[in-house]
Length: 141
Image 1 (tube, rainbow, N blue to C red):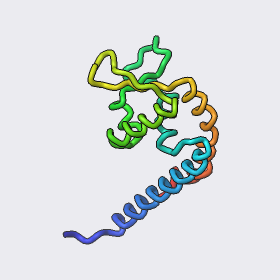
Image 2: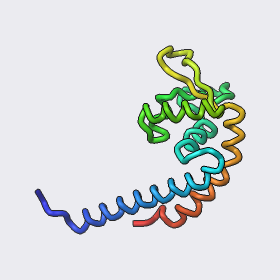
Image 3: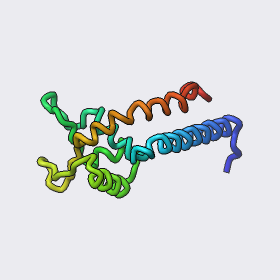
């Protein structure tokens, strides 16, 4: 096995720095959102549902309906972890699930009015955390 080079050591150091910033930022988002009954992963699901057109959207779509399988890659959770999170969000009245009309095996998820309102309320909090925690890290390394 070849010995690590100084360049490899720098890459590893940069990688560990990225992981540290991510961990600190997620913890801070969790802390700020906890009084609103949300964690960082909860917010990420609400944020995707609120802000991005789903992959199958048409220009006539007024409601952002996602299939659970389309959310998996967007929020970086396993399918089972995401399903549990969506169940909790549904129990809290923030999202609704239904069978996909084009694929009966799929599950569609959409924000409820309460989910949209809570997302709008906490969005500035999350964005302030990102601005504070990520300031100066984009060009680091």
